[in-house]
Structure formats: C-alpha cells, structure tokens
Image (tube, rainbow, N blue to C red; front, side, top):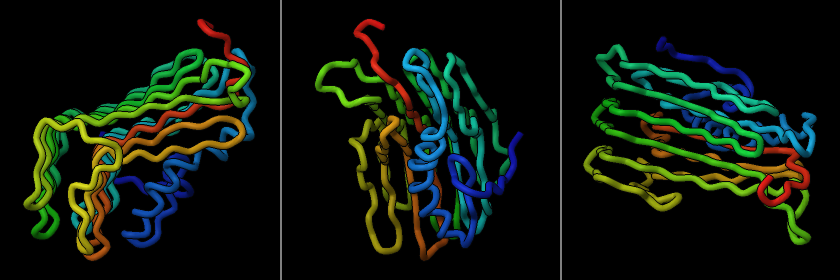
Length: 243
C-alpha cells in the first residue's frame, strides 16, 4: 500500500519533520547516524553480531507530493539471519507515476545487505521534471577478518549504484554506474548527487548509507531520494578467517 508517511525522531529510526527543506538535512545526516546510537546499547555475542539496516525505494518531500515514503523496510535489527522486504507494484498517479518499487534487507551471520530498486518513476514539480528507469542502490557490510592489526569490532562496507536512465530538468544520463558522490547538477538552485555514499562508525561497529539519486533544492522546496540502502553491523568481536 502506498501512503504519505509522517515519521517522528530520526529518519532511520524516526524522521522529525519541520519545514520541507529541513527534512533534507535530516534525511542524509540521520539516515547515516541513527543506528549508531541504537546499536551502541544493544547486546550481541562475538558469534552473533548485531546486523542492522534499512532500505527505502522512494522518499519525496515536495510541494506536489508532501512527505511521501514508498516501500520502506523500516529499521531492521537482528542477531540472526533474516530477510525483510517491501514492494509496491505501481504508484496511483497522476503525479508521481512509477512502477515496481522494492526494498530488501537481508542478514546472515556476519553480513548485512540492503537493496532498493525503482523500475520507473516520473515526477513533475513546477517546471522541473524528474524521470528515472531501473535505479538500484546496494549497501553491504561485513565483519572484518580478525588479525592483530584489526581494531575490535571492525567492519568492511561496500556500496554501488546502477542507473539505466535518469533525466532531471535538462540533464540526463544513460546506463551509468556512477562513482561515489558524483555531482550531476551542482548549482545554487538545484543539486543532484548520484551514488551518494555516507560512511559511519563508532566503537561498536559501522556501516554505509547509499542513496542512488539525491535531488535537493531549497529554492523549490524539493528533497527526493530514489533508492536508498543502509547496512551496518555492530559487536562483531573476533571473527576467524572462514568463520
């Protein structure tokens, strides 16, 4: 089911919503940092580290959509192996339109993987058109192999973005695997970042947030994220090679 969602607190625990553009700051900062505070107080053994993550297919905060969250796994936090998935086959339209918006978080004994995917999206905000096809974000975090040089609870994260087609205003890309934090548009009026990657860590572990496409404009009151995936692990302890 599709619905606009008000989420209080942190974005990846609960978004505290103020003005439209103030959400833009919370979306990035709190997505990355929320689980650090959560996991710090959680308990997990060295053989069962705490795997956490979240995936969201679409987040939009615009004058047209209001606050809209589509296909959101919510915060996943577990010491076991699990899969949490959400999917919307089609947006009702007329604005925005879209199809097959999915979000999945999967955990194994020492790994957390988050994936978000949007098959198609069309959104018109004033005169700014946003069109996307096959946009995917992935974030994977593992416990690091323990050696004498490895800090306690060390983690290793990797992320990626693939985009079959994206057009924002007059700028477009096709069949792209952009490098981390690629700026497609960077003006005072409009900013578009591709494969936005934000790493975070504390004494208990760490992880990586990947936003495939992040579009912001304070002048237009726009904050749109297409495909967001966050994975992190805490309390790894000593993990033996091959374990």
